[in-house]
Length: 89
Length: 345
Image (cartoon, rainbow over all chains, first blue to last red; front, side, top):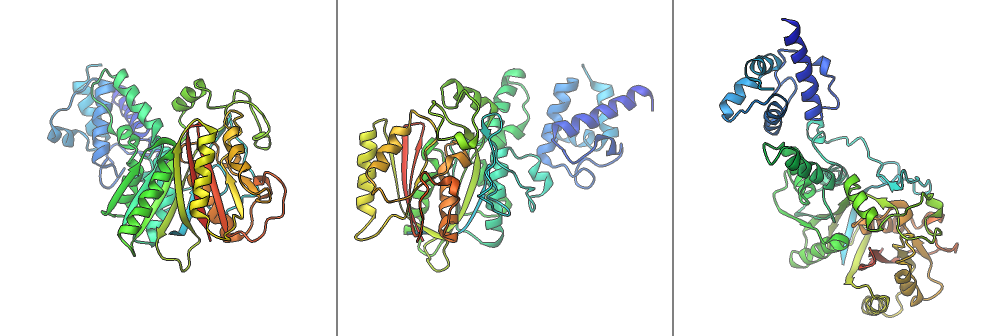
């Protein structure tokens, strides 16, 4: 993992904690392959919309197909990979 | 008569756990912020998304719903989740009506408190929110009274909730609602200046039409819109003559006096028609001013009737108070919305 990817993952963890108000979660404690939904962080369907808004605002990524969202918002690894490829800002 | 069987209150005072009304908590930055509990029993995943109004409402209501199935949830709120409402509106401007995060919107609606209580307790029955500013809670009480007349034997969760939001505080400061100077709780009624202190809180009650075991009962509620002290006095007199019968005695006049010298005339007018020996107690130095502060007053009335005593700092004049069975509440919101409530043991 190069420095840029590591930095992006760190940034995504901080943004998720801040955006979703996960006050009891330390961003550094989120594992790169920890599931965001269900087990792991335990996020739900409203959180998935919040994360789609996050990607739009912070990285200029528009996700219009919910099926696409499900593949992207699996864990930090999948989010970071998608952001690296599709970010417009 | 509507009987109150359980009462919970989250307020700027120690009213929720280990209740202690003798210890007076002071305002911070001219605001009386609620002392929020740890909200045990509310899942962290749900709690993190709640705004203050929803959090306080759910926190005060869930202890009742956890143990008592209800046939409906009736809430009064003057402004609902104002802080989230402003965040959501700011989003619309900031992101040019583009993609918006839903959380703030969900929490901002006035009926979010009743909805959240319904969802958390899986209660799919009557769910109603009254939003008549300073009469919001009184309308919720009226709703409960009407429901129980129509549906004898049922029981309801009745509550009032409002929060302090920075944006709303600034707007209301500009319209003169709050004091310009910093005052201590002890100077609340003696400052002789315009404005009051902002407050917030949530009070929730389990109500039904069954007297046995009740903490207290609401035997009447009245409301009036007026800027005229003479009209208020006439309505107050009418309320008393209609609902205080025969040799029934008022043991305590609970006044919503707010420390605002512009609205003192209403309280003075109401006090003037009561016999001089009726003790007068006040509560807004404890709750602060908010649209549903009368729900705090009702909680306090229940507490007084249950324990047969009241804190000395609430008494307008130091008198011996004995045999507390009937409390008459008069409240006033912004010198325009007046309400009367008769609470009895």
